[in-house]
Amino acid sequence: MAQYELLLPKMGESVAEATIIKWVKAAGDAIDADESVLEIATDKVDSEVPSPVAGTLVKTLFNEGDVVKVGAVIAIIETEAGAVTAAPAVQATVAVPSAIPGIALTETITESSRIANTENRFYSPLVKSIAASEGLSQQELDSIAGSGNDGRVTKNDILNYLSNRKAGTPQVAPTPAVAAAPAATATAPTPVAASNSASTSEIKINTPNVTVHAGDEVIEMDRMRKLIADHMVMSKHVSPHVTSFVEADVTNIVRWREKIKKDFEKKEGEKITFTPIFIEALVKTIKDFPMINVSLNGTQIIKRKNINIGMAAALPSGNLIVPVIKNADQMNLIGITKVVNDLANRSRNNKLTPDEISGGTYTLTNVGSFGNVMGTPIINQPQVAIMAVGAIRKMPAVIETPDGDMIAIRHKMYLSHSYDHRIVDGALGGQFVRRFADYLEAFDANRVL
Image (cartoon, rainbow, N blue to C red):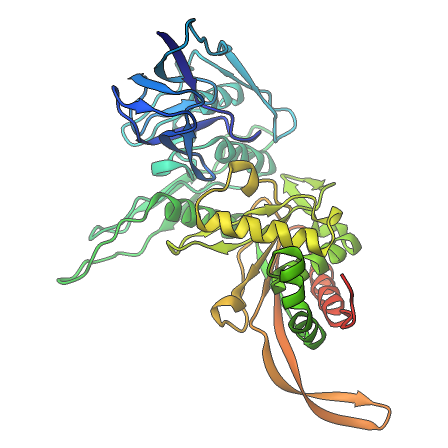
């Protein structure tokens, strides 16, 4: 008999740790190769950890709810092999690429004695290391809004805080959940200016006073809904949103898709929806206006090289997830269609990996799929813009012809473009959505794939 050390696997470049949600197997249980042993949750997605070997689970080294670093030994499996199978040694430090210039991020096994876990908040060794290297006090760290499990401060949370702190943007502390309780007040210190002045001001966020009445049902948010809520509040707080609207005539697209969809499915084994067509047009528009494909890091504009289109998708649970089509500018329409269908299917079955929902540079959301005519979408940080496409409807329209104007039935839709007014002005934001509409309207109804 031999023992195999099961490690918490790497789940993407941006993921350094995960929370154990549930042990599927208990000590003494038999395990087949590739059978799920436990379920984990990262800041981005839930997933399962399978065993690469067959055997018996001897010991679990962490409890449900524990936060574990990538590469740590999480369980011992006894196998039939003739020799001991040793897992690769876990290094004492883990280098993490910095998202903010000038910040060196190195996670050490030894936690900073200056930063401690509180009764209501857990801080990972990585977060503590960053806080220590940047000189954050316990009080300041406690004020950071956490987007992780149970309000936990993640690496991205503290990096975003530090970025805005350097830029002079005040931070808002997390607000406790309210159930028949008085209004809570969250107070966060305003970052000190470059002159190291001791003067500070406060921002107070008052939550509404909520009363639970007889017969009311109190439903606790699930983990994903809490993450979404925190992310949306953060986005509205960070970015001054502006939305521009354009009406687009998509008659050529509707007729073309209706004409080719059966042959396309027979030939490619895939259904073609409107989404890949919209993404193809978005890629062309981004190439025309590359300053939409950026992120803002304090006062630094990060112009993205890759065009990675996020595709907002509703889950059966009612929650939202945004898988990303990486390097969409390098794909043709057939390639985009295959990737879109694959990501959509695996989204519904909770089979996405963390890498597949990270790295987006621009997001598309289809509010028309719910019968909505238009919407005002919230920017998916750290992006600076998002496009919402509304329902396609038959509408009477004036058509100009050589013989004069005429009324005809056309397929039309509204496009809503929300953008961050810190970096995208009305001219760029408005021109972008107009150009997007132009590409849709100019679609070749005789196109051959």
